[in-house]
Amino acid sequence: MNRIIVCLVIIFIFMEPRIIGAGQKPQIGPPANDEVQIGPNGFIMPLNRILLVRKSLEYCAIKFTEFGKDDKAGNQYAKYESYYQGDKTGNFAKANVKKKEAILFSPKPKWSIFGHPIVFGANEEIQCGSLRLWWTGKGALYFFRRYQQQGDYGLEFSPTIWTDISKVNVFDARLKWYGYDESRQRVNIPIEKLFEMNNIRDLIH
Image (cartoon, one colour):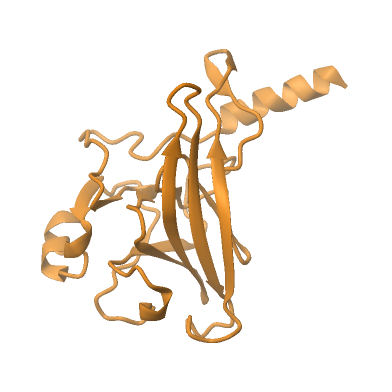
């Protein structure tokens, strides 16, 4: 039994995808507190701004409400709210919207195997109805789950300037939706400029 457990751990280690920006030539630092980072395989959102997620006609809205880190232990956490609208209308004002509040937790690795960090007790998955998103600290989210191979699984993200779910309109013409795109270069954008579409087109390929 112990041998089986060790083998499974090793398999998970080598299946684990790389972080946002992996394989890109231009190196861009982390976003400022008032910026969103758009990357080829994921986004980094600032506090209290809503990220819209869709898969086919399922919609989710996610907002991080608190980031934290234990400087001594190196553990990270984030609080978030998620709102799930799965009736294919995209209407977040309806009573059937499912709201969830939860805490994500990423402990600092205590040891490693073959140079790969091993952690236990982590909660790094955002739950939003039937949708699941991998979180890796602060506002970082991916288009795939932790042990999935990097690629397109049908998820699309749209960062917004909104802070209140009552303001959300998934059909707003100012929204820009992004799917997984390994050729897209990483860029940091001031959150207040997200809806200035001409500026965004100049930055994003």
